[in-house]
Length: 286
Image 1 (tube, helix red, strand yellow):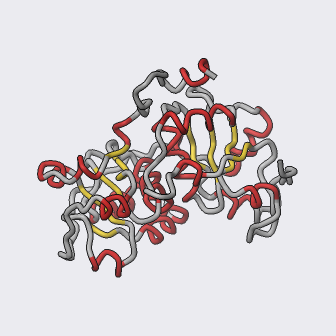
Image 2 (cartoon, rainbow, N blue to C red; image 1 turned 90 degrees about the horizontal axis):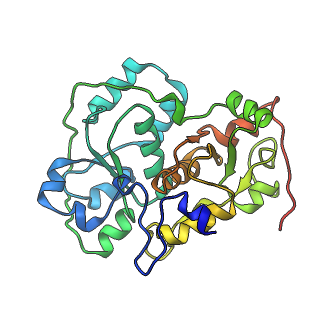
């Protein structure tokens, strides 16, 4: 166990184990400072009603469902530069994303990182933690301050169906199914085919989250989960779920823990489970 934990740059001791890439996450107490609120473009991925009732000062609401739909349909760098620029974001914009659902926050994180935005942080605990800590709340309906759009797609952050099919042959990466055990074993699901990608390891995304506080579990709690799943810092990993949200949370966590080659199969089971050329496994429950 010690050797594998060391692959995530963790040191055992009496102090809490650090995340390997702490720059990917920000605590409410750190963001709730005048300089930080001014420095970052803050994106709120909650619904319109929730946003209108109160949000972090200066935060702009993003229609993340619309962004996700566009991501699956539009590959034009020009249109994405325009789309992000209208939100006040380009590759050099420091961004903080928050919401009331890790899946939607991480989904937008995944999309922005794919399009090359260099500094994108998730607020630890999202709106739940912000409210619990009685941080500043605004009801001003903020409008984005547009910037000149600029993108630089990082194609190695997203996996395609054909790439995953190739991985089944050369076994050069671990495939991580982050859905529920029932979905993984083929006992639940809405796609034409039920089950999982052959050889995939199951580690449910929600196990990374403290359900009471909605904050991420500590590095010391997460590291043994990754070890048990056979995940090491240098081993390539592809995450998938049903439609990319849960896979985005897991890709974020793996990077936070020091993962060096992490890809999100963003179209996930919505594509794989409805395709005619994809093999499916139905592992027995343990």
